[in-house]
Length: 507
Image (cartoon, rainbow, N blue to C red; front, side, top):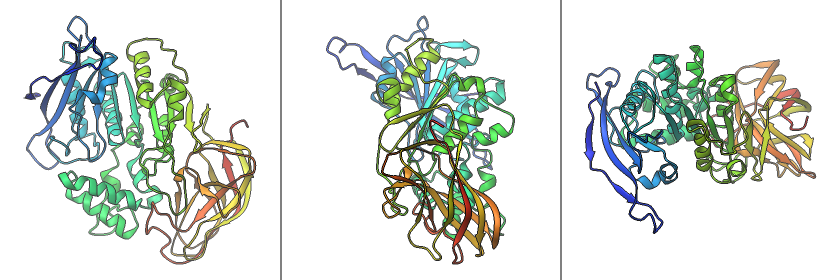
């Protein structure tokens, strides 16, 4: 049984125009509900929320609800001004503190179905009892979800858990931004720890002691050893098991896919949950039918850090939302929800397609992100003991690439634990080539290996290479995102007969 304790009286905020000055934007109610105890404990946990009821929402004029939650280390919104655009368009909003953050209790289990899964289902149940919220049936409110990063992770959790428990996602549309498909693959692709992000996430959780103690220990172990802890070493933690169920990848492995429209927002320069994490959600987490009613937008932004080694770009822009909706991703979200939740034809286009921002702040729209062109790059090698990245020419501009590239070739590496970092770069020469959208992906091979056929994934990108410039493959023995994660013994990593597989637009 859900116990709701009201914590504050209704708050009235006026509209900005003089004519509507006497008309409130929304009434605001704060409360908490009781959810399941943390694993291994018996004390129920309080999950706290704020509900914003737009003016005019009544039992006789019910409105759709939008669920919102915060990023890692954050807390819920309590001021209606945070949702002015949604409220003015006739949407109610419920914003909540995730377990371990804000006023909510417990520890954060990072969107675990057995823990946070109960939290979000109880919030949906709460909304289903509000008479002024539009209902599609018993326990089924007309409802969408918004939020980025950790606030995107809960959206998939809520929809998948409702699907598991009731046979339907209950939520009618999602708009997740800069979130993950697989947490272990995000935090440690190929088992190589993104040390800068592991340290940052641990630090962000420390003020509220949000994480269970074993997770702090594991993140420290990963940063120190350069290996994602999987419990194989006695006395170490097992993060692979801890995060196994915490994302769409696991839900899909259980035979579940969402048959609802999703507006995907992902960062092209995001070095924590990079573009390919969103593309994998598009490919696997929703049905083919749902993809026809969904939109994928990638913008320059997200979880960003300065790209110094290898040298990258510094750009923050969202040309695709502007092109599709004439404004920001929030404006695009409202038009998307108007069509999906209210059945309005707003003239929105772009369904079923990928809209990817380039570093030049243009928008490239494609129907597929798969590689369709293979080019020869010869031998691609790193330096012996560290130092600067090396650039290898692939194609002269003009050429447009949008999607997910990869390398194949014959690998030779004579060290004990061989690591290198790869990405695409653009420049007039190898000396000034800069990393495309700041991402690299690691190779992690326990050696030695000689002449072994290998595939190396490259970061997903969107780039226009102009005439007079060249597209390169960049091979680096080190990366500032993966600080300290280079090879454990000196030696070059060499890929011979290298084929570069590119998603070339217009081919």
